[in-house]
Amino acid sequence: MYQPRHDWRLDEVEALFARPFMELVYQAATVHRHWFNPNQVQKSQLLSIKTGGCAENCGYCSQSASFKTGLKAEKLMATETVVMAAKAAKNGGASRFCMGAAWRELKERDTPKLAAMIAEVKALGLETCATLGMLTADQARQLKEAGLDYYNHNLDTGPDYYGHVVTTRTYQDRLTTLSHVREAGMRTCCGGIVGMGEHRRDRAGLLHALATLPVHPDSLPVNALVPVSGTPLGDQVLKSGEIHPVEFVRTVAVARLVCPKSMVRLSAGREGMSAEMQALCFLAGANSIFVGGKLLTTPLPDEDADSQLFSLLDLEPMPSRLSA
Ligand code: SAM
Ligand code: DTB
Ligand code: SF4
Image (tube, rainbow, N blue to C red):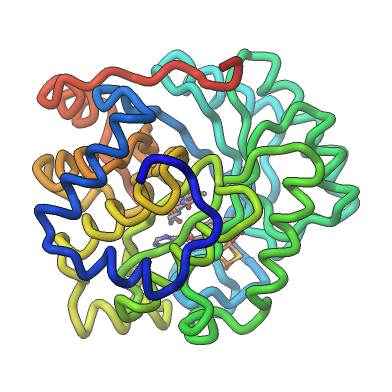
């Protein structure tokens, strides 16, 4: 039950989802405390270093040029602005700083700029993470050399529902970038989104895909869809209603069980979650969050709300595990 496995079958993952909720959460909490201190939650901070105008058509995304969401596209931020934000994140207690760009893929002309930016953030003593779209093997090596610790690239959903979400890149494209990241010696941050109108078997399909990767993601973000008006999936969910919070907690618990040593991150959508729901998620194995009032384009709880949450639940920030 405790040791990581890579030979999960889809029906086994579906069977975990179907377990009585109390037993599922108890089992996930048991595995969680075997590998982690259950009172520690890691804090990461995100910055959108290049906003909007993206060439992909991810059906949930405020930043795709394919949809009218009212978001204003911006150019790549100057390195000094990024470094100032990273310093502020560190002072606010974040141990990881993640730079996100609304790109389909990293362009050759931007690679040296990104490498310089990453080197400066790393020099502040923060863990570095970036999410810049698809990477070639060579770009992955250059970013690693610059000091990049983690690369975020999500599978987003199970393979059978993927075609309902995005058509401008394939599941295999995503897997290929992940293999370039691993081969360059970086840690992967890879997860998906819950509540896009998918079925439970698709949530199981996503977790099955993650659990059967050659190396489990070091971080596994579980995003709750933030329905953005003007996007196809956002509009669909605004009409038909959001997924039940208990099903979200189930997904967190199954993620903890199939990837027992991964940092399971409560990501997008936390702004809409009660303290009780977040407490259930932490009990079920989530042990990382994004902080700082804003994700890329959507809101997060502010610093005060999160410090109240930490004090209410007697949580402490997790120190960096990179040297461990
Ligand atoms: N462009 C890069 C990419 O897609 O890989 C990086 C940025 S992208 C915004 C990072 C991730 O954010 C997506 O893979 C998706 O899982 C998540 N995301 C984006 N919009 C979201 C939304 N409205 N609700 C929940 N998650 C969202
Ligand atoms: C991830 O899985 N979630 C974060 C991070 N990786 C880059 C991004 C969430 C973005 C939510 C929508 C927005 O703020 O634009
Ligand atoms: Fe572009 Fe990323 Fe948004 Fe997809 S999720 S449209 S790749 S910014």
